[in-house]
Image (cartoon, rainbow, N blue to C red):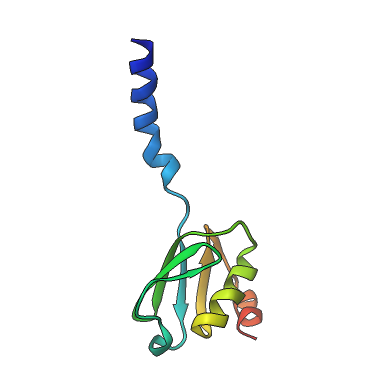
Length: 96
């Protein structure tokens, strides 16, 4: 009975554990968005128009992740990585 209760508790908690903060970017030029999924530092990026979202990814500062995305997709107008949203100043530095 005890094993059954532990298993049930794990199943209830699993969705909360599995949902890490999402990462997203808004590209300045939607034409530069990749047509297929693209993996950058372990994060799987998918784009629809100028809006790109990602799951997973390496443990790194959001500013570094932004520079890596900009190197592949071009300048961004908004960026967040694992729940950390960059400021206007940080985005300007990322695009530089």
